[in-house]
Amino acid sequence: MASSSESERKEPVNEQMVANMYGALRSELNQIYSKITELEMEVSEHSLVISAIEPLDPSRRCYRMIGGVLVERTIKEVLPAVQRNKEGLEEVISRLNEALEKKKKEISDLEAKYKIRIRKPDGEAKEEDSGRKEGAAQGVLVGPANES
Image 1 (cartoon, rainbow, N blue to C red):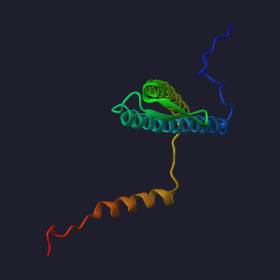
Image 2 (cartoon, rainbow, N blue to C red; image 1 turned 90 degrees about the vertical axis):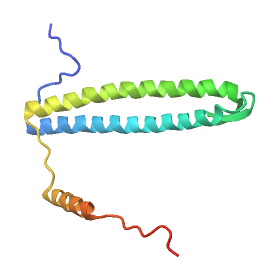
Image 3 (tube, rainbow, N blue to C red; image 1 turned 90 degrees about the horizontal axis):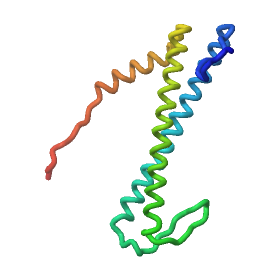
């Protein structure tokens, strides 16, 4: 009778429950960000491997780590597997980006519904402002190129 989507949650009873729910959503968001970053690093490693072995002779020996075991193969066998792994990682990253957008929307809906605003402690805000002023005034001093 009562149909509800997965994104709808129980209505929080008090402020503390809203804060806990918001904190949990922020934590999930950070976990998704870190997983995306980790997978992007793996994709870049796969790209480096592909670019390193592509120009080589396909019959040349190479070694590949499979489940913690180093296995001897040829480039002809390894290259397609590495390319498939890279494509799979890119697909997972795109799915995680979709989940990230959904989570961001869920957080912004919660912020709008309960009028949540993030406040920075006074000490942090002052330090950031002074840091920006110092950074803006800094420059690089370079001497003449050919000084004998």
